[in-house]
Amino acid sequence: MAKRTGAPGMIGFDGVRRRRGESSPGSWLTRGVNSIFTFVRFAEFEILFVLFVLIAFIIFKDLTSRPEYNDILVKKTGGNDW
Image (cartoon, rainbow, N blue to C red; front, side):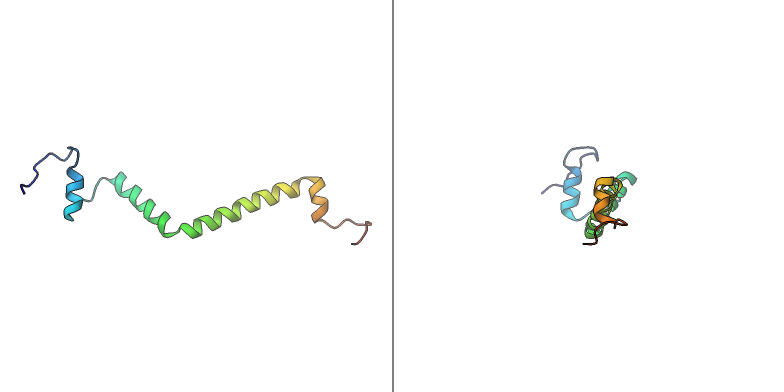
């Protein structure tokens, strides 16, 4: 099979390079995006946990800011002690 001698901008050139195991460092934007995706894959559980806690905190804070819901959470003085 003949070696491809296409210019780097041609369609399919990078795919051939990747299949052969050769790799170029790529542009700084490509390396940055790849590192972000690698981090997200590595820390997926922690990211989801922090988002869950943050959303739960915002909902709970919103509920306690309303007087009608705040009465449930705060003990009233002089009221029935159930």
